[in-house]
Length: 430
Image (cartoon, rainbow, N blue to C red; front, side, top):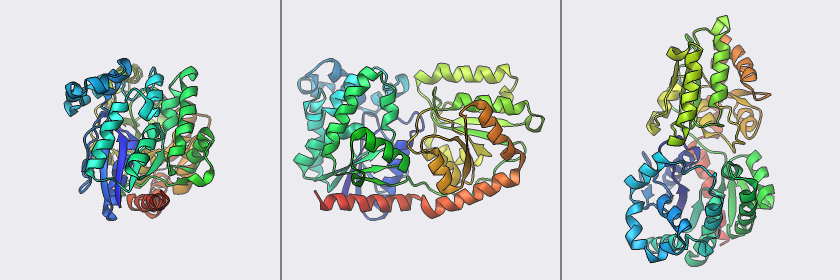
């Protein structure tokens, strides 16, 4: 089976769980014998160790998409003169300098993308279709998320392929828009959802949420939980001193401020005066002021020597990070569709402590690799962490149980096999 996955890139400046999921799934599909091509959208994606998985050129380069939005018709009139703006060094520079993954103020551009052949970026869609046709039409085009549904109609019509769309964290982007911008975009999403053969949600909770949002019948959505690698050996779980971990983009609203708050509260407990904090996951220029505020909070509390907030992102260093922490807490205030970082932590044998919201309870219940708490405050987080940190043997026991559950249910091989099943089902009905 020939599969092309269209996935938005992050520029590799921060931990993008959607990118990690798509890349690992591509590797898993390739191991099952599928012919897989990754086609990055907007910003580059580094396949890394995805041996045997082809990578196409960047389509809908972020700079050109923005220019075409500002200057209608530019894509067709000046395409050959603007091609250099899709060069990877240019796009990586743009990713570092701007909040290109921030939806604020991008409602009109998002709507234009969803209009597809009728949008201001229609010339980019022409280029994508031409490339795919020249490369040999795929059996299935897999859209990484529903915000790419504007491509589906042309892809299905001109290539004769089935279009399968993953559902993963679209509402994170949508909720960042003012309601006046978001409402018409949601309406476009619901309309364009008719052009996809199947949808694949990353959790049961998210499937229910998006079925309501897009007006989808339940039988059009399958749930395929993400898969992760299970590292060997398991993490050692530092106990003396214990280390509280945070791993996600270091951005306002993703939970770092609450994890820092819980860290400072726990440090006032005589049992945890030596507690350390390690936070990583990368950032963009837009996040710098927020990160500086968290560092100042830690310094003013006299804990700077025991807190490592690293804004650099090294994709291959994730395994090392999870080996260095005792427990992970990423209390995002965004309604996360799943939480791949949590599964990666549990796979390493490191328990998670998460708020009781979104898909977090589903992950914890299915793996047994952590606990949930409420209400979502630094005080409640500190209260949930304290008993675990005070009982290292219990912490390690939860870590071992979670790790074995991930091995049994949530590996990349499990996820890839389920995805391939859904792709075949869609291809048979095209």
